[in-house]
Each structure stands twice: as C-alpha cells, then as structure tokens.
Amino acid sequence: MLASKPVYKYLADIVFPNTCAFCGNVIKWDNILCEKCAEDIPDTFEGLIRIENTDGAVGVFYYESDIIGLIYKLKHGDAVFNFAELSAGMIAERLLARKIADSIDIVTAVPMHISKKIIRGRDQAELLGRFVADKLGKPTNFHLLGRKKDSTEQHKLEREERQSHAEEVYTALPKHRDISGKTVLICDDVITTGSTIRACAAQLKSMGAKKVYACSAAVSAVYKDRGDDILP
Image (cartoon, rainbow, N blue to C red; front, top):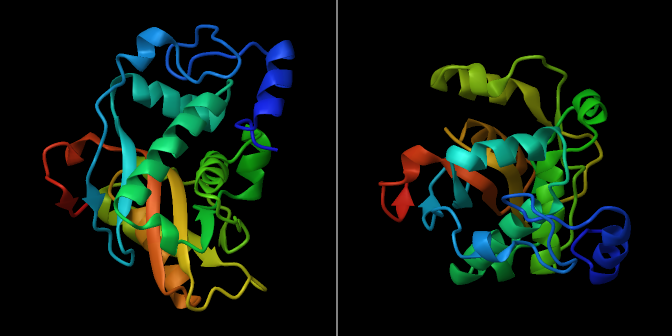
C-alpha cells in the first residue's frame, strides 16, 4: 500500500510522526511540506530532455544543494515517502502539461540488483515509480528489466564509460510481459548524462515498446540554462 493513501498516512502518523519532505520538521499527518518549505521550494526543471532511445524525459529538482542530501536519503534510508510523493506529483504535472500522461500504458523503473535492494531495504527508482503510477492512475510492471550483478558505481565513471557500462548491465528479463505497441514510462531518481535511461530505453524498444518516456526526481544542474528542449 502506498504511503500516499489517506488511511495509511493517518495510521502511520500514530507511530511515526509525519515530517516535512525537505526540512524534516513534524507536520500535520496529511501534509507533505511545512508552511515555510512550501513557500521556499528549490528551483525546478521545466524542460524536456531528449535522450537517445526515448521520446523525452522530464524531471523535477536540480541535483544540487539540499536536493543531493534528499536523493541520498531516498537511496539509503530515513523516512522519505513525502519527498518521493512530492516529486511524483510534480512529475505527473509535467507529463500532463505535455500531454504525455494519457498515452502511458505501463510505469516501470530502472532496475536495481536484488542483492543491493536487500542491503538498502528499498529500490528508490521503484518507490518513485509506484508513486508516479498512483498519481497518474496507471499500472506498474517492475519485471520488465533486470540488472546484472556489478559492483561498479555508475556515478564514478566518465561519461563515455557510463554508456558502455550501462549497455552491459541492463537486460530484458526472461518471460517478461508482452509490451508490443505499448508506451512505457521509466523512472529513476536522478538523470545526469542519460546513459542509464538510454540503455534501459533501448532494451524496452527492443522488447516491442512503441514509445518510451522517462522521468526522475532530480536532473543534473547542467540542464539549468539549456532551454526547454535539450540534449543530455
């Protein structure tokens, strides 16, 4: 059950007090932000990133300042459901504004290897994907793509290395659902060079997807001054 459901949030607040998605202060059980943070939301990305193999990607916050810490928490721990829900709602707004939302058939996510998911206790891309699907009223399928076990950290590689590495580790899962002619939305926590999304989208297209869109809670700050329709 998603933490965005009113009954769940009310009951959870009894045991774990609801906290602001940004500052962490305790807030009313059905809020996402405190009044101060709601009036001082960080700069957001409004453009469309043209990543190869996709039909476009949207994001919300710039990967800088306090957002870096929030993304880290999304990956590694702490109560981050409000940040995921806030990001998902803003992603949904962008997809609706660009008239993409109605065409989406399936929401999926960049896959994490099961060993890492067990260690972390969560898959941040899948968590975001569930919230986005909930906001859009779309079905999810997180059994389309897989990731080979690999200890390499993508963010530590050079740009050219990231692409070749991503192409090697992301694969189509056997016995996956038929997505021929479908429009798929793939979610991730951060889009930087676009290498991961590019590789995953290529797999989805090879599996028969008609269109692939992507979204993320944050995008690289290098996209700040590149206009509305940009290349990674």
